[in-house]
Length: 218
Image 1 (spheres, rainbow, N blue to C red):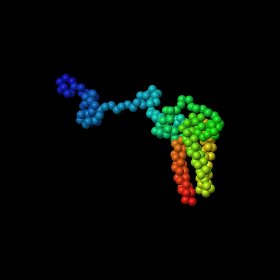
Image 2: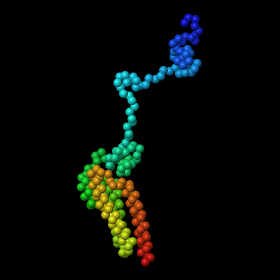
Image 3: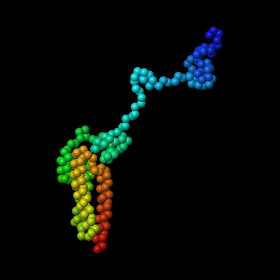
Image 4: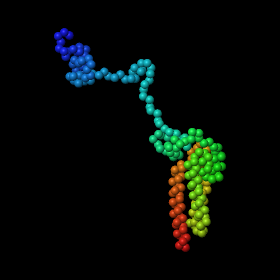
């Protein structure tokens, strides 16, 4: 308007604060009197999208997982080992592009030749080594106890224990090789078997030492 002070320029009757009604400039972001925000409320992005039939609602994020190369179990991405068989996540990077295929009966026959070979034929080399070592250790202990026994009840009990363990490892490895070749999970993971083997070895050494001490005192 003519004769208006310079600070009135840029003001109009329509440019007023919606909170207190004070005059404000058209490009003001907040009221100089009550300090209320003059920015327009953002329009939710769903509104314009809904007008043209687009659904922009938030979708749940997919659950990240990795597939075990040994037993094909789906595991959470945060797990370092398979929940089913204990295979390391690192084995996923070392898995062959083409999995080893062998008939279950063939894997069983190889395992009957010597425990662990059937696992190897089925593409489970590490587990085959673990089974072979456990069987070899049990067999050696059985032979040692059988050759050194003098007929005492303790020595007979130890020989019987090693005999049962050796037979169990022999037949169990054959059945397990058959299961693995058929796509099933092993009875125990190679890590668990190795710990059991170490414990079995320590207990056996202790028993042999006790037996030798008792025999020497007679």
